[in-house]
Length: 363
Image (cartoon, rainbow, N blue to C red):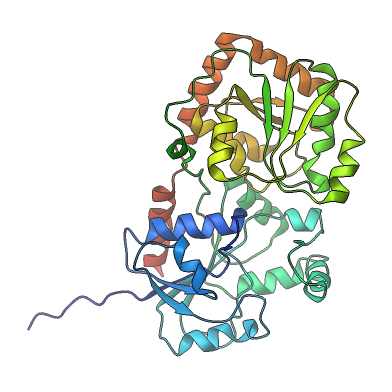
C-alpha cells in the first residue's frame, strides 16, 4: 500500500499588515507572504478581515487576536489547538510559552536599541513598555532564544546581532526587496540629464536626519527637495524653520504608491541622509526603477546599492550637495543606473520566499 505524502501545515503571521497604508513591517509581511504561497500551502494568521485584501485571492486565513492584545503572551497555546507544524512571524513579539510547533521569529534590525522612540501608533502604556524593553538586550535574548530559528532582512543586521550576541539560535537572512513601482508607469524610467527633483521617502524621526538634506539645499539652486511622507504639524513647522533662504522644499504630506512612482520618474534622484537604517526600501525601489541615488555612507546602504549609488557623510550637507552635482554628468548617471539595477536584482520576493521555505523545511 502506497502512503500519501504528508502536507506540512505552515502558519504565516500576517497580523502586522496595516489596512490604511504600508509601513516597512506591513509591506514585508504582505509581499513575502504572497510570494511564499506560490510554493507551498500557507494559512495566514490575521486579526482583521480587512487584511485579506492584501493577501493572495482565496488565501486560507485564521482570525485571532491583535498583536497588541493582552492575549499575545498566550498565542502559542491558542495556535496549538490548530496543530501547525511550523509558524513564521515577521516580528518577534509572539508569545511562545507551551508551543508544540516549530517557530521562526523575525527581528529586522537593532535601530530601536540605538534610537528608543517607539512607533507613534502604539498606546502610551505599550510605548512605555517598548522603551523599557529596549533598555537592555536581556528581554530580546530571552524572546529570540525561545524560537527555533531567527530571521532578519539583511547581512548587515545579522552581523549586528552577532556583535551583540543577541541570540543562541541560528540567524537566517530572508532579504527585504523592492515593490514593483514600474506597474504604475506607462514607460520605463530613463534619467539622461541632471535631476532637478530630489526625492526623500521615509519617516521624519531624528535619526533620519532630514535636516541635513534641507541644509544641503542651500548649495543646490534650481533643484527641489520633495519630502513625500506623512508628517505631524509640529515636526513640519520645526523643519520649515531650517529651510535656507531661496531653497525649494516641498512637503507632500503622504503619497500613494502610484504618485510615488510618478514623482520618482519625473527627472528625479532618490536622496537620504539617514544616520541609521534597517534596510532602506526607498533606495531599493529607486534603483529598481533606474533612478540614481545619493545617500549617506551606511553599511546597509552599501549592501542594498553597492556601486549603484553616490555616498556622503550623513552630517555633511555640503558634501551631500557635491554628490548631487556629480549627477550633472550623463556618464555618471548612466553608470549608476545600470549598476544599481544589476545590484538590486539580487533582491526579489520570490528568492526570499524560496530561502524561507528551505529553512522551514529544514525544521
